[in-house]
Image (cartoon, rainbow, N blue to C red; front, side, top):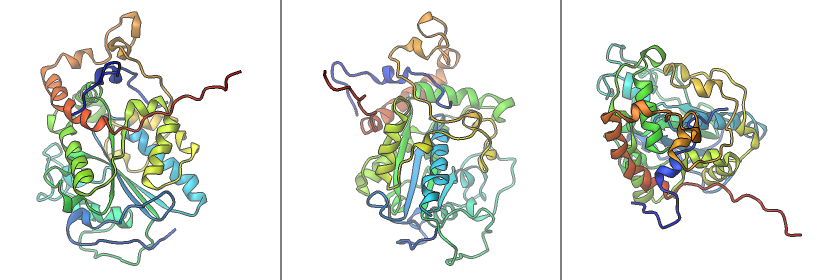
Length: 352
């Protein structure tokens, strides 16, 4: 795991910046089998080289929905101008995890909800969507339509813990895996607060199994070591320090063009997000990825910064269950952070 040499900021230093970030058809090389995610496309080898199939794996409360919104903006601008269709899937593996048939469902959080029986309610169905695009209305017994107009690009943002128990080479091969992280001292207390906010999110308990860093690290290990994929990791704070620089590096890494138009958008609801009421309010009301300088002191995470007001999550950080979850997540976070894309160095004017 990562250790820091003298003069490098610690993980705690990196964490202490602000909490909010929001301010046509193609022939696809297939590896279709009945093995869940093996039914996917080969990732693009270089930018604009051909179809891309990408998953952004993350943990809750890592500004991942704002990141997804940037990808949506790209699909509506630069890619559309090139005549390339992009399907963006919003946490599709959450469907079988929370709402699928009993043999698929891993969580009891929505136990009172009747099981879903469309093709996006099974792991295999979601895996096919990553290859062919999104067809929420397809039923489990509707057959597979190989003649549909497939998108040039498919991008999915998903929580790593949704595929707990299915993380292996066979499951993951055939698609490009990327990762979005955020320091646990921010993500965990934010998750705790939302999990206990019945009025806003409808959740009424905190489940440490939904923190997700263990599964995120497991997916990373399989993707990089067993599948030989290049590590593509984005840290939330580094992203906010240089949205244009980090997003352009990310787009180049996954084989899609970067456009400055993906850094801003019109606020408002996005179809598909209604499954998770309350969790995406910041992203719904946001207008873009706002550049935010990183701070290095614990106080800077507070509402008053150096003026000494309390830490934003002071109450949650005092809860033993939160403390334990942070401690359990730190090594996993540090292991991924060492691969994080870094902000570009600021341009200096030429010497006189």
